[in-house]
Structures are given as structure tokens and as C-alpha cells.
Length: 368
Image 1 (cartoon, rainbow, N blue to C red):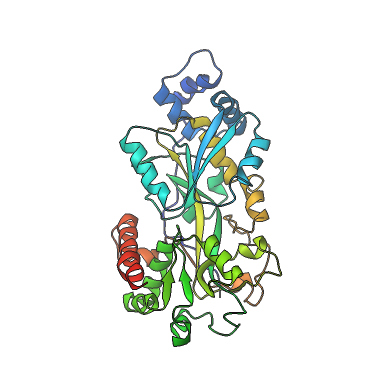
Image 2: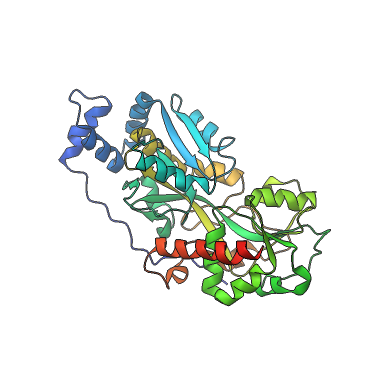
């Protein structure tokens, strides 16, 4: 089986940088300052041989970049690596999961443009002109086409698997077939995390098996208020036998001796973190610099590899490791978040997300 990559989204085309660039470049060191709007537009679209140097010089005058993310370990990994590469540009991180979307909406309504870059899982908030700016980036030539759109750029990702404690749910209790989770013996033993992957997983399962399957599955699981990592911790501790959704990156993050094993399901959901820039970003140069760095194989790509995240690049293997007890990564049946099949029944991604959220609340939460 080959990896299924969503290539249904149109290719991105950018116009050549026009005369306004010459006016606005001076805002980062020239003699004639440009109007703020011209400066912002120039920064978002600047793509020349000196792009990195240009953005860094300007970012140093801004001093920081405000990074909102639902990616755990950002404070320990991404921030220090970026600050080491670009001294003088501090990364100020707000790390949360489901609360970020409401936070962005509330800040916009209040006229407070606090964040510069949102780096979060695909599909948790519509990436359009409501909150975000269009931008160009050298990284657009490197990542999978579905991860390069006018309002966002993908950088790292993860594949969801079912995780289990072999002492509480011995190997062979269920298989890679999602329907095997409906076995009566598993009722009440499967914990469903609540984080940015939750709704996308519901969307994938609905597209594959229908709403009746989701209702049957809901009667089997317990909805947890914790993130995927928090529920994985419970599995290791022995307080939760099975997690319905855990990143296979945990293979790299937990000790090999931990009582934590993985069953990669078929299909398996792959989600990527995508970076978007606030359309009124207070530090536009630092924002562009960070997004470019996140999508760079020699920048954020190095960090993603170290923590076991999936890589977004064309022609590059998802992972540099295998998951014990499962098929080789190259044979996984992958469905990427936002796949055309998941969205087929909806007019817009926003409509899809609303439906999946409603299913979670009315079917899964109500059954727990």
C-alpha cells in the first residue's frame, strides 16, 4: 500500500514582487520609510536571494515573535533552537490546545493583535483572511502541496495510533481494523483524549465508516478531558488500558521499558502542524522569519526529527524510525487531515469542523 497524499488542493501561484517592494524594503534599514501597510505587505511577500538576511535584520529591531501553539515541547525544543539561530529575536510562547481558537477570536474582537504566528494542528481553525495574512515563503517549494496554501505552511506532524498497556490489554486484544475496537470485552477500557486531533479523527472515521459506526464506538469509550500525551501517561501509569489516539512520536519520547505499545490502525490519521501569520501581526518580520525557519529542513525540520514528528517534505520518508510490532512506515494506509474524502459532504472546511465538533459533544461526550 502506498501513502495517500491529499493533492486535491490547487497549487499556489504568487505574483512577482512589484515596485512597492522597493519602497517598503527601506522600512528595515533604508532611508525612506514606507507606510506600515506597504511594509507589512512587502514582508509577507518578500522572496529573494537575501530573504533570510532581510527578515532577520528587521526582526532584530522587533525583538521578539509571539508564537501561539498546541504543539507540546515547543518551549523545550523549537524556541531554544530558533533563538540560537537568530540571536536577538526572543520566542514568546503561548501553549494551549482547545483554548487557542477562542483566545484568537476574543483578541480579534477586542482589537488586540497579540500573536504573530499560530502553529497548530491542521483543521482546528479556518485558515483564511478572517484572522490571517497571505504570505510567501521559500518553504512552499519543499513541502507537500496540500501543506502549502496562501494562509498557511506545514512544518511537522504526527500519525495517530491506538496506544495500550500490554499488562492491561495484551497484544492481540484488537487489530489494525477500527471495527475491532467494538469488541464487548473492550467496553469502558478505551479512553478518548480531547485535543486538537479529536475532531479530525471523528471526521476521518465518519468518512470511512459512517455515523452509525461512530455511535457504536462512542458506547465503547470514555472521553477524557486530557490531551493525547496526558492519556498516554495514564496508559503508562496503568490507570487507562487503551488510548484511542496517541502520536507514534511517543515511541521516541517514552523510555523503551515503558509499558506502552502502539497499534497503527488502517486507515491511520496523519495531522500536520501548520503555521499562519496574524493579519495584523505586531512583529511581521519575526513572524515571517519564524514561519520560513519552521518549514526549513535545516531549521525546524531538524527539531521535528529529534522529537519523532513526521516530516512534511516532498520525497522524504515520514519518519526516521519504525514502530515495533507494526508494518513498515512505507506500508501504512495514511489519510491526511483535510483529505478530500473527509470534506466531500461539506461545503467548507469550517462546516465540516462544526459537524465533527457537534458529533463529539452529542455522541461521544453524551455517552461517557
